[in-house]
Image (cartoon, rainbow, N blue to C red; front, side):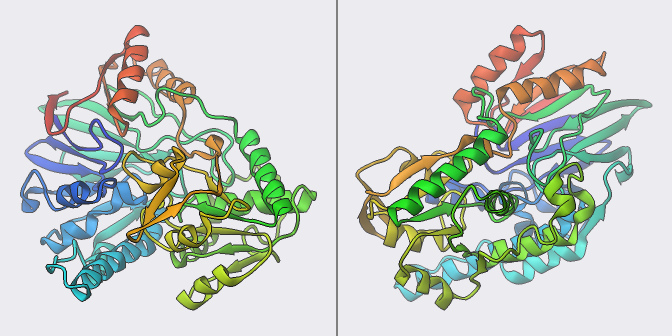
Amino acid sequence: MQIEFYGAAREVTGSCHILRANGKTVLLDCGMFQGKRKEAADKNRAFPIPIDQIDAVVLSHAHIDHSGRLPYLTAKGYSKTIFATAATRDMCAVMLADSAHIQESDAKHLAQHGKPYVEPLYTMRDATRVQEIMVGIPYAKTFDVVEGIRCTYVDAGHILGSASVILDVTENGTTKRLVFSGDIGRKGLSIIRDPVIPTAANAVIMESTYGNRDHDTVGDARAQLGAVVRDTAARGGRIMIPSFAVGRTQEILYNLNGLLREGAIPAIPIYVDSPLAIDTTTVFEMHPEVFDRSEELVTKAKELFHFPQVHFTRTVEESKSLNTMRGPMIIIAASGMAETGRILHHLQHGAGDPHNTILFVGYQAEGTLGRRIEEKPQTIRIYGDDIPLRAQVSVIDGYSAHADRTELTAWIDGVRATSPDLGPVFLVHGDAPVQDVFKTALVAKGYAAEAPEPLSVHDV
């Protein structure tokens, strides 16, 4: 078999790996590139192979940098099967519709402001078509992807429905096992179960987002959240949290629920200002079968996400009204890297107020507004305006749903423990300097680790 590393090669976003075996071509993920706008837009409109050569798609999870170009495939005529877990399928129903809405709105906005018309990357109709051909598969159930390639999903512990992908590829009477880690989660994350480590691998495609650093513990993150809320509320300010709609928003709500129950934070209003986050919270509530039943709040709380302090603001009018309200509050709004969505309006109105706090609870990719704010410049540019950055900027690393250096190493060590014939470990989904550090560490431990360049082809 051959693997061509197309997306998330020497970078974080755009996850897409092309597997060729038995004359068949299978995509592992088909994610959207994010970051510098023109560069990302150009990359999102390119594809290294004709769409009609793709025989199947195997999706690891619903995050847009892994699923976001599936409607692009259907827009270009793809009509074969897309495999995912059941929860991922339901997540994609809302996430890809939201992404399509953004594509269409951006195209309309440019046209209304006298800019040259740019065709949207895809439309709502294309996103709907994805749902029609996406099949939900349970964890631990082996299924045929195409002739000679069988797949089993195991829980990656990253977000609801996330999976590591085990592929048994049979060619010329010989079977080799390729493991695609997807995004590896962490032990002890709220709501989500711990990662399941795949076994008996011959080769591994492994994410490496945090391969050069360790996070604070999950418990530390919860305590830090409480401290930020208490301090900002005491100043009379608002806490603005750019948050991914899937996973992170629900985890923050879950932890705020627990902190309130303990009396660890004041009972200030909490606004979830994102239609997508509202819809994905509903998807969470549809899939309690994949919750971590070892957690006390999961088993005892009647409502994990709909408690008295929480308000869901779906309409634009409700969102705008938040900017005129006074008093301390928490606003959780998309997007997680502050690139699009309602968080931009809140930052535009609130970044200049020293009473406020901008709180990052997730990874900020290079080139995004979130990364620039993390670096604490004197001004930030939003909608063409330079906004003074006077608000406090806080970062809680422990909320990452990605495994850190120690956790990644433990994961691959766990794979190797059951894999006497383990060959190459291909590092993907990481910035190049991070991958270089992690690769050096793995090679020192005896792994045949490498970090493939974009569009490079490797035999396994």
